Length: 102
Image (cartoon, rainbow, N blue to C red; front, side, top):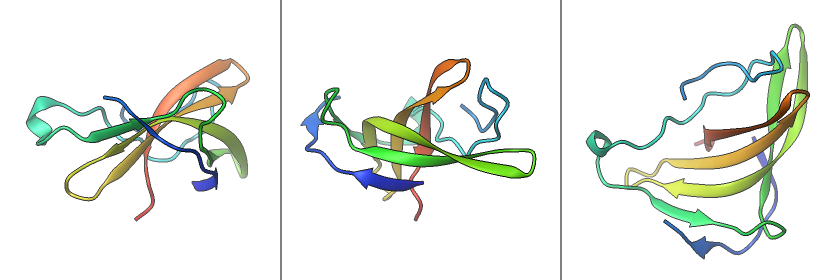
């Protein structure tokens, strides 16, 4: 993933798999659960002011980058960061959470 634009955050508070269109996708960040430790700090952005990522999806021998607006960022106390994004695919829009590259 790579960040392609930035916006100002506002306060707010799945397992790896395949998108509905058959593309393989990057490792997903699972949802936070009570046993996972302290709740992550959540930042969100309104439509029109969202940062975005390009997510690389693979199908067969080809790779394709998809523009993915960020709907939320989760910052965990252990330093991990997960971005929640919307990805447009042939079959509609999917919502995913991906770990930021370390």
